[in-house]
Image (cartoon, rainbow, N blue to C red; front, side, top):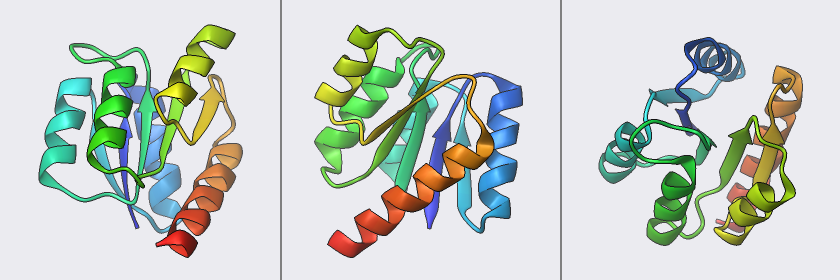
Length: 123
């Protein structure tokens, strides 16, 4: 299972990468939204985890592109903002899950597993 992690905070990115690799996933990292779009165009992924606040291209744009291009690709949105409007906007664009920062790596792992199981059962 291949996961694209889009996060500009190096500490959070390293933590997510470490945890997901430990769980047996193949992880590709992108530090900007622009880099994420390039990786989405040239690779296939089973799941995308994206922060919302990114340099150059926002996480909402990454989410929107992912859902428009790969309709059944699950996307988990991470955000330091827990404003209801932001969360609702992410779900309207097709987010499959939303995790507010700070979050526990264990919770993220459970949500990733749940989404991938549901996604592979459909496919």
